[in-house]
Image (cartoon, rainbow, N blue to C red; front, side, top):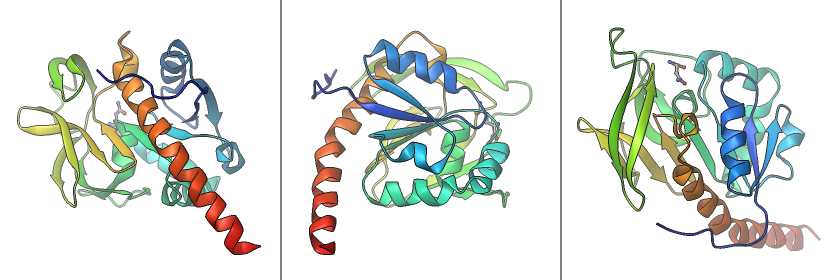
Amino acid sequence: MQTVITNSKMKIGILALQGDAREHKRALAKLGAEPIEVKLPQDLDDVDALIIPGGESTTIGMLMGKYKLDVKIKQKHGEGMPIYGTCAGAILLAKEIIGSKQPKLGLADISIKRNDYGRQIDSFEADLSIKDIGPFKGVFIRAPIIKGFYNGTEILSEYKNNPVMMRQDNILITTFHPELTNDTRVHEYFLNMAAEYKPIREARKELKESNES
Ligand code: GLN
C-alpha cells in the first residue's frame, strides 16, 4: 500500500448536485483531507482534485450543464486536476455511454453501459482484488459495466472479466462504491494522485502566468 506523499492538507472537491456526496466527505475527513462541496464553478477554483459521486447520472449531467460546471471541470482536467468518478461519476466521465445521448463530460477513453448487471441483481457485494491495494469489498448499486477501454487506460480491478476500477492519467474510475464501506484505501489512493499532480499543476500555472505577463 502506498502512503500519502505530502503533509499538506489536500483540498478535495466533491460534486454535490445530487447523489452520495456525504459519504465521500466522511471518508476524506477520516484521512485528514479537506472535503469541499462543489455546487458552482467557482467552488473548483481552490481544489486539488474532484470526486464525482454515485447517484443518477442523467440528473447530475443535466445539473452540471445548467450551472456551467461541465465547462469548468473540463478546463481544470486539462490543467491536470485529478478526477475520481464512482458509478454515476464513472458514467459521466466516459467518452461513450452506450445507447444514451445524455449530457456527459466524456474525458475517459472508455465505453460504458448503464445498469448492465440486470434488474434481478441490481445491488450486490463482491470480493475484489485491487492492484496496489489488495482485497477489497466492492459494493455495487445499479452499476454500469465498462465494455471497452482504449489509449492507455490501466485496469486496477476486474469482476467477472469486466474492469470495475481503472485509471487513465489523472482520472480514476470505480463502478463500485468504496465510500459505502469503512475502508478508506481507495480514497487514499486518490489522495496520492492529488498529491502527485499538485506540483505538475502548479508548474503549469506558473508557466502560463509567465507567458501571459
Ligand atoms: N444507475 C445509475 C445511473 O445510471 C448509477 C447508479 C449509482 O451511481 N449507484 O446513473
